[in-house]
Length: 132
Image (cartoon, rainbow, N blue to C red):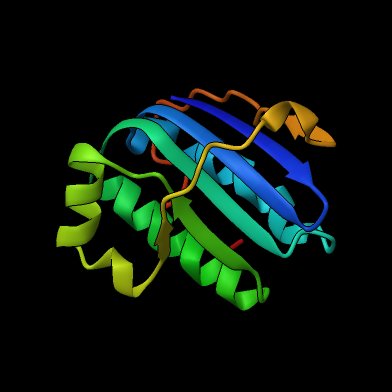
């Protein structure tokens, strides 16, 4: 899965593409943790139009994301989900937890800051119940 983070003003957009599964847990966390610590960012959007699939571990990662953003008083939205990804989110009742929006894809070239999370490949389970 490819993940890219772009920040503009008070919002950040995390663009994801590919399969959202257990293999990307560290990159996913590395994409949003700096945003939680950034006092300027008030809203985090996850652009998911190019996510092909997500599994149960991805649902768990999203729940953890929800808890962490709520703890620091930031808004989070899932953008442009479709197909099997939308079906999975709806069957898990994630509309009750997340703001799932459909919007035109923004021009991300104008974003002030952009980064890709460090690519780490773990062959073991690094955290059962993350404390950080």
